[in-house]
Length: 166
Image 1 (spheres, rainbow, N blue to C red):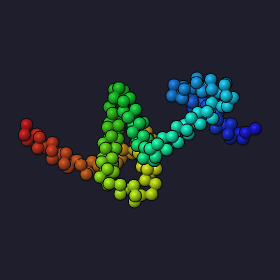
Image 2 (image 1 turned 45 degrees about the horizontal axis):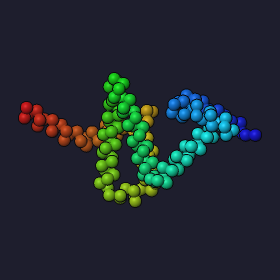
Image 3 (image 1 turned 60 degrees about the vertical axis):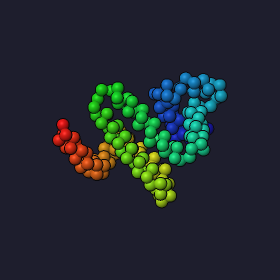
Image 4 (image 1 turned 180 degrees about the vertical axis):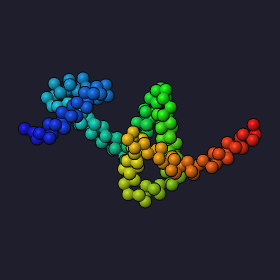
């Protein structure tokens, strides 16, 4: 006998998995459910937790942070290239500019950021998700408020110099 809230969460998770059958391998989860006798939601959660734990054990928080900041944006960038809409191209190009700038800054810090900021990789993961999440689109804000004022004067001077030479 389970709590009604648990049953509700399991039903919602099952509906979510059913919406993305190729991603969640829903048909294989159904087969496992029949063979094992446990809910496909519990099987899915077990697989996700095992995979997440393995990734954490192999590469630690840095690998998880790097995967979170790269995989989804790369996937969405490939989709944006083929969509034909300029708005999503701009959004993902802006994300990659911010990502590159922050990656270079992190590398130049020589590990100081990691030692000075507690839970650095957790905070970095949350920050990068904020940068690309469709609800917030923080990359645009970081670019317009921080990077563009910092870099634009040099780009404009470079463009003016190139026009004079032409």
